[in-house]
Each structure stands twice: as C-alpha cells, then as structure tokens.
Image (cartoon, rainbow, N blue to C red):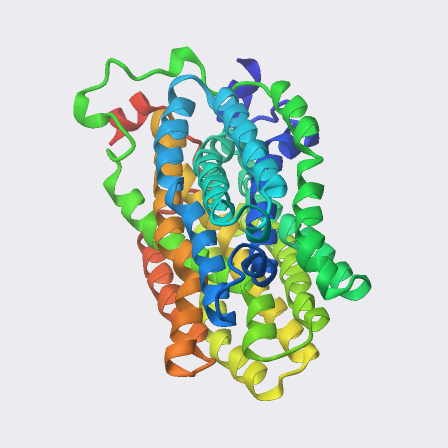
Length: 437
C-alpha cells in the first residue's frame, strides 16, 4: 500500500528493475511468439498447407496469423475487467499461463503430412489461445507500470512495454538470421521454426515465478462501487477511448508492417533469406533504443510534442524509404530503411501508450486500455500483413504497404493532436476525477 501511495504522489516508489522486467516479460514473450510466426510465415505455410500454391500457402499462413487477433477483444474484456476487479497481478498471472499453453501447443503440433487436416485446425486453436492471452496482457501490465512508476519517470518506465516488443523482435530475428546462415532450408522448415518457438517457452517458469512476487497496485480502498452508474465502466471516457483507438490503429499498422519486412524482402523484392532477416534485426534494434528514448523525452518535454513529432517524421519518411527499397533491391537499403522507419515509429508508440493509459481512470484503466488496444490491433494490426500481401498481388504494386502506412499515420497524428497532455499531472482516482471534472 505504501509503495502505491508513493508512486501516485510522485515520490520515489519501491519498484525495482526486476519488477519492471517481470511486468514486461509477458508482453515480450507474447510478442516474440507473434514476431516469430511472422518471420517464419513461409515455412509454417509449407508445413500446414502443403497442397496449395506458394501464394495461397503464404496467404493461409498469414490469415492463420490474423486468427490470433480475433480472440484478443475477448481476452481484453475478460482479463482486463478481472484486472480492474481482482487486481493487476492475478490478471497478469492468468494471461502468462495461457500464453505458455498456446506456445507449447504450437511447438508440439504435427504438420499436415503427419495428421492431415487436423494440423491446421490445431494451429488455429493455439493461435486463438495466444490471442486471448495477449488481449488480456497489455491492459493490466501497462496499468501496473504506470501506477508503480515515480511521477517524473512514468513515460520512461511505461515505454519499457513498447521496448519489450522490440527486444522480442530483435531476439526472434536474430534466431531467424542464425538459422538461415547455418542451417539448410529443409531443416528450417522441418525443425527450425519449432526450435525458435521453443526457445521462447524456456522463460515461462522464470516469468511466472517473478510475476508471483510483484506487488499489487490496485487496492480495495480504490473501488468505485458507489459512483453514479454513468461514471462506471471502461467506456465512460468516450473521448480518450476514441482517440486512443485511432492512435492504436496508427502504431499497430506500422508495427506489423515493419515486422512483415522479412517476408516483403524475400517474397516481393526477391532477396536472400539472410538479407531479409537482416531487416528484422534492424527493426528490433531501433524499436528498443528509440522506444526508451521517446519515453525519456516525453518525461522532459511532454507526451504530445514527442509522439506527434516522431509520427510526423515517420509519415514523411515512408514513401522515400519504400521507393529506395523497390529501386535498389539490396540489403543495405532494406536494413537502413527499416531501421529508420522503426526508429521514428517506436519513438511515438511507447509514449502514445503511456498517454492513453494516463488518460483513463484507475478503476477502468486495465479493462479500458485492454479493450481499446485489442480492438485496434485486431482490426488493423492483424489484417495488415495479409492485406498488403493481397493488394500487392492484385495490383502488382510493391509500394502498397507505403500507402497504408501513410494513411494510418495521418489518422494517428490527428488523434494525438486532440488528446490532452498528461504530463506532469499525477494519476487521479476515480472520485477525484469526477469531483474536478
């Protein structure tokens, strides 16, 4: 209780680096899983949909990837609400456990050659479990980080949520890069992608142990059961939620299109697997470094200036980056362009997530953020990769991802402009927020 009070009034809390790591570990592991699937989409398509053409196999694989997003809103509603009712910690433990079940199931599922049509069915089931877990992960963990952080470092600590995604992407891409360099294509298709998923599952027992030791940042004394009915529920804050949905649409499309760069480089630009995975390594490095830089700058200069400036620079850089990649078709251009786009995008992503979390009342913070995040990621992030793949196939235009990114970036910038500035105000309780309007 004392730790939470100190965090809310701005004095240094007792949060440790280990607690930060425990909070973001689930998000990192779940994103590692989604990243790894994206990186090995071609190989997974060959294993589970072998009787189709190359394009159809890739589309089926990417659509199965998108199926995992369908369960996110359900997980967000169930686990997000549980996090607001029972506490952040128990919700984080449940999501982490379910994520482990989904990953292990994916690793152990035989291919189509072994069990026939049951293979893609089991693959979809595993993806649904993983999607449910991830839908309920972001809300409670981000709420925990914001509530436990000291006031003057809240954006930096909250940005670890976004940085953890970059770490996962970097780790997954590095494994993929090593496999393409030292293993045969047959080995990668038969065993390599399973090994990559299995390496992520190794941290499951350690993560569960660390999460069990986390302090709780939501206490019974902060309940709002006596508030007027219109002041309850995650959608009682319509303005930040609608603006947040537009912001999430913007940064989730950039996140998943940048994750797609390995497939884009190999399938559209016809580059070697080694060079293609290099793009994802660049994406991971930039995502980690610039997400934390964005958090640091947002603590000093405010949330809105940082996220709007970075997202505008990203939008301006998209067309030149894709034009150079399409024209040059070489590793240096693809790696540099991906790294620059990831740098601008990541600088705004972590800050935007922090600003949205700060805009929500504490009693609906977990569920509100989880639901909005899940809907935005499901509708726009989950469909980003199959959509751009299909559009490029139909139009024959390799610039299709650039048009999508520019449009969503413009929508995100507009939403950020209308979101209120949340620095350096402390997070207020539900009753105080209503009393002050």
